[in-house]
Image 1 (cartoon, rainbow, N blue to C red):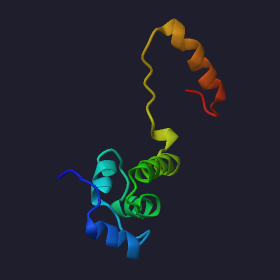
Image 2 (cartoon, rainbow, N blue to C red):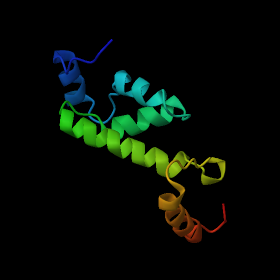
Image 3 (spheres, helix red, strand yellow):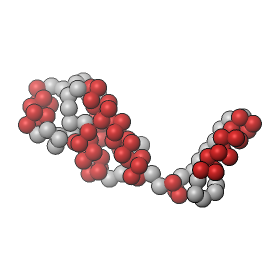
Image 4 (cartoon, rainbow, N blue to C red):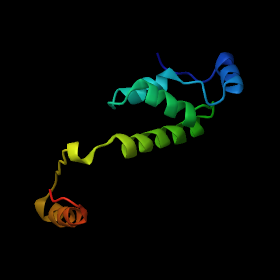
Length: 104
């Protein structure tokens, strides 16, 4: 089911329960690509996306994704894949490796 925009009930919920109403379509959209508990996503969505304004929702989604990347991405569990011409990529990789505390 695709979200077609706020209806009268959505507007009333946002008016009376500002910061507490969670759009489940946004929850499912983010949940597909993350390994984060639903209650965490619901909290973040209620905090950043409790509005009817599409631009504010988009900015809120950006804030949710940035928050998740700062809090839930574990660098030690990441795999870095580099694709491209070795001559072009190698200097960038050396610079990146020099900036890391632990070598690759």
